[in-house]
Length: 338
Length: 169
Image (cartoon, rainbow over all chains, first blue to last red; front, side, top):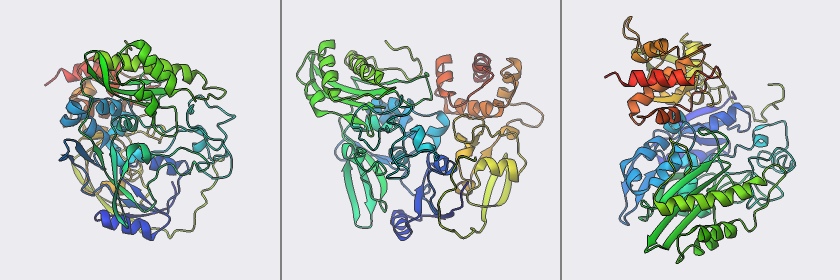
């Protein structure tokens, strides 16, 4: 591994001070992605600021009827938290669809948001990559791009965001709370991650000297009609080819409110207001779901090895909305897709 | 590896070694470690606890699984200095006196391995799984053990062994 200095942050303000004082410094919490990237020589911080002991480990009810999740709550604790399991089962299911039990025990809520793409070329320091070394080019556009994005790509980057948890957080309209030298601010989840455009090395709108302190969920949890359907090359412990978080509120067979977010297809969890608008007020039928899928994918663009994802995404959307409407969410242990 | 470019980083002063106190398999242990030492390397290279295996060293295979404060984790992705004060249980610490842990006995009873390299990680992971109490069916065991890869393909017997151990009080 590489050489670096190690310090601990005593509180959030100290963490912000320390990271602002040293341009080579990075925060470390669960470390599951950062340590790996350091071993691969993709990340080379000169100092690690250990934030894992900060008091950001609770899940608290908010005055608005939602929940505030501390940034250091481990992924597994969050998935199995009784309030998450009861009121936000879509989030619990998405978390349990990701990584392994060991990694979920280590990984933090804030770190999950900040994990980096698993694009092979990003990891392979022998190849050009605009995300790793801005201006060198994108190897994936003309390379092995089976896992890559079909929506919101740019000429600079076609990488995907790898998180499952974030897909559900996008669907649930979560808010990210951050602290920095100028104080605290809140970022709507859909605005937290960025599209690659011309600067794929900038993946989020978090500033370098800011720290994620919490993720807040609004009251609406879609606990009755939801699913998280993840399609991948093996049944467990693999990144998504396509995943869909779907939440519906139904009234007399009509869709009153709808949420639809996709993973594995873009540089950020993908939501499309027009697709959700096409669901509202309509009957919960396959024809309605199919129209929403067509709308969401209207600008989808495939590359040499991933064009199949467009059809796969369309079918996964219809299947996910069907599961949600029927109240038969996808099981993350019994994988038969019904 | 040769194809890796040397990281372009400025000269960083060689850090002082850091004192780390761990309770490993019930024994209070004082270590003095460079910050980049993973818990896996601390166990294997500094304490000769070579039961915990280095497989991929990237958190993808599960061979390095140990229990930290009772929770199963990948020790290859964990810096030892971050765990100061923690309680660590490795495969060497599961047996009580000369009596095998029920999972160790079950793995023998079911021939739940071939080459054996993944076995310490499988058993520590299964110990964590049983403590978590979320897996009831064979499907749930398979899903919640998916972080432990067995290249010999002993999975059916591993699931059977875990089921046997789960049935014991």
